[in-house]
Image (cartoon, rainbow, N blue to C red):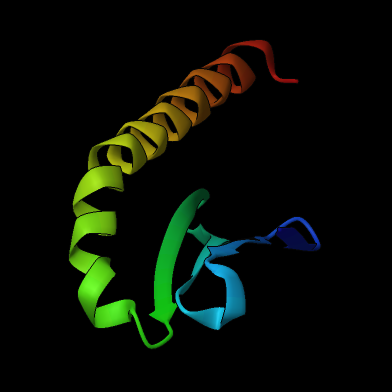
Length: 87
């Protein structure tokens, strides 16, 4: 499930049936000195959290790092374009 709150917040939720494990990843955009800061928060709950969390995080960590790096590169490209074209 994906939920958005305006243009500054997006939440991804996934999990196992019966609430055995639920993960919520929240992305927030905040202005910071004329730029935009991307904040990411992960929250995991459920009775299987302790058993499965380390395996889940270790399996997805590199993909998430790659995703955030791609977002940063794209933002930097767009920022350079806006500065050179003024649009």
